[in-house]
Every structure is written in C-alpha cells, then in structure tokens.
Image 1 (tube, rainbow, N blue to C red):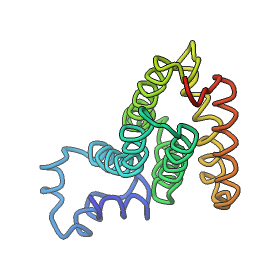
Image 2: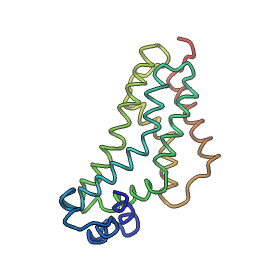
Image 3: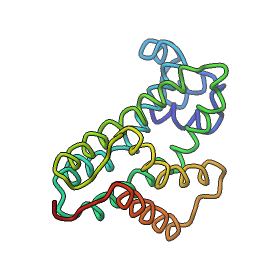
Image 4: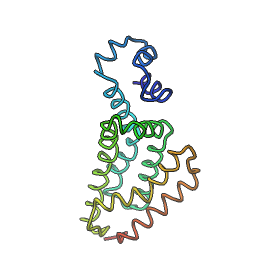
Length: 193
C-alpha cells in the first residue's frame, strides 16, 4: 500500500503496475492477485488515506462531543482535526488525483465520497441529534446543519490547500473557531439545558 500510494502520488493514476510492483518489491502478478486491477488498488489507497485522515476527528466526536460539558471547545477540536486531516499534503494530492480522473473513472469519486463525507457526516449528525435531544441545540434539519458546519470550517481549508497554498495555521484556527461560533449561534447553543 505504501508503495502504491507513493507511485500514485509521484506519477498519477496512469502509473504502470510494473512501477508499483517494483516499488513494493514484488511482482505485478502478486499485485493483481491481491487487488485485481489498478482502480481497486487506488480505492484501497484512498480508503487507507481517508481512514487516517478521519481517525482523530471520529475519535473526538465519538468520545467527547456527544456528552460534552464544553461543546464549543470540543466541536472546535473536532473540526480542527477534521480540517487538518483532510488538508494533509498526501490527502490533498490524492483528492486532486481523484478529481482529475472523475471523467474516466467515476467510481474513484464514489469511493472518495463513501470513505470521506458519507463516513464522517453520519457520525457528526448522530452527535448533533443527541445534543438536540438534550436541549443543547435547536436544529430542525440535521443533514443541512452538518453540511453548513463543514462549509464554515473545513471547506475553505480544503479549497486553499487543493491549489497549493494552504492557509497558515493561525488563520485556519481562527476560521474554524469563528465557523463553530457562527454554527452554535445559528442553532441556539445552550450551555446548560
């Protein structure tokens, strides 16, 4: 997997499987035996990268946010981890490769969506529902709220990172903190419900 990731990042999706196999110290036949084809191998690389990118934000949401006595701070921490994970250089480079191959291989985009937003959004949605049930937030449309949260905190970080000039850390933190504040204000966050 490491060899495949490095090869895709260095040469793009058109890298030959011979190059991947040589970098892995194995044969092309062995690579095909395990993965079947290049798309399946690339999807495995995507899955591994997005698992890594989402590990910390998923942990923070699941372990702290749902039962938090410090919702703002815990939501800021989760959004920072979410944004930083997705804006890591290898993650951005793979995202750009997927975007570049969508016309030829739309299944790559589906895999990105499945292992990215469709994996993380339900977790944050479940937590927001719980906070609504506790009377801490007032949200009528949870799915819209998740997209708004992502749009105010993570999307700007991804957009600037995707074009080679990431936002500096201090601006990123201010962006995420103010995005969380706007989100909590919109949905009537109550410290003690």
